[in-house]
Amino acid sequence: MRKHQINSSKLFILNILKNLGLFFNSNLISLNKFLMQIKMPINDDVVLGNNVKIFHPDLVNLYGCKIGDDTKIGTFVEIQANVIVGQRCKISSHSFLCEGVTIEDEAFIGHGVMFTNDIYPRATNEDGSLKTESDWQTIKTTVKNRASIGSNATILPGVTVGKQAIVGAGAVVISDVSNYSIVAGVPARVIGDIRFRSSSSVQTTDS
Image (tube, rainbow, N blue to C red; front, side):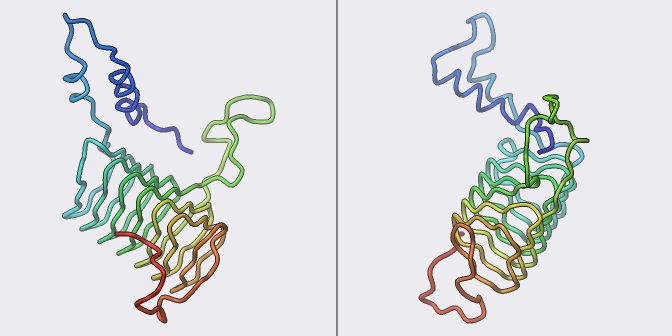
């Protein structure tokens, strides 16, 4: 819920204009050339470890975060301030890691995973005034070592996903997931234990 940076929406808006067939005056730079000059930011305050792989640096939005060695980050990922991502992680495309999230080493985050950090979000206070950063408190969420979060899962704030646990694709996690558990569904419920899974187990994540 920290204020998003304005640059993160430029490509989206400009692509809409392009699709509508709106072009700049011929005396000005063409829209295509202008689009090529617009970049989503990796801010100077981002701390990148050694050998971090960001597949399309122009198509991510990273600010105030810390990314560990050998981690891979896909396209259209946003990682907000004060997020910590460990070493040798994989953050797949279109995922959103909000302030308050910690991803420990060797964790897997599937495509389109949404983290949240406010249990009762509101746009305004009781008096109708717009909320500011001083009007709410970040609730922290942790994904432990070697855990995996399936595509399109939603992780509510204050949750810990345990060591080597697996969260199924599309699950909504509202409470802690114990070490080695496999959870799936809405809300997410335990359906197995990673230590005893068979080769015929239901696929819960995608690589």
